[in-house]
Length: 346
Image (cartoon, rainbow, N blue to C red; front, side, top):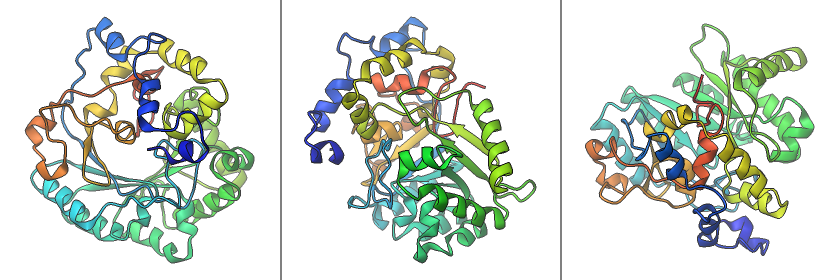
């Protein structure tokens, strides 16, 4: 249940009410209708290339756009037992990539143990890092740990300007983020030939879709180098999804319908064919299975007839499962598309 909505007495006070806003209501065409009109329904998985694990909703930040509704007061954290179930699933497959997210995934007490175990299985590890966690005193040695285990770092940075970053993520976040990026650069992250990948994530600050990825990446590369002598490998643009805190913002500011109209009118069948849920399986902090991290936050589980918990992992059925969709899916299929790896149509 979205805590920020409930705590502020917002009329969108329960998950059920949030889902009613996001389910077809006649104001917007159902997502399945848009898929069908282009011969893409039903949307199904084509395999599992990424096992994405939400290690918990605990975070040291409370970002205004957060689709997880994460924060310092959250208590949901993945247990070691659930992690062991995830490891057994990996051992039974050749899934090449494990994507660790949160909250701040590093706040899970078993984070380093999990990274070591996944790497021992020969799988690539991604850490979705908010950067400021690397400035917390007890995590000062974490950058070196990540480098030692060749962990890919995907780091959130909504702007190369302090005021824009702090407006979205909190006062002082920009300066701490730059200091963390410098720590990573000093270890070789983001530098050509190092083999240490450092990618940035850009989310729009307001109620509008992101610009073209190549354009904003060029801006970030130029400005971060010129202003701060910082480098990175790639920049991913991700559309703000109309769920949890961002949905609350849209409704409070009267921008929900205009924003959804932009997404719906920009539906791109090429993006729909390439959405991340077709090759990703999302595991919640409690082991429940979802088609993507966004469905996870809305508690929209995998379709009936396929496993719903990692303990019952069955690669054959899960790799060809039907995808559960809703109005929020327009966020991943607008324009060049959007996913955890940035735009999906090159």
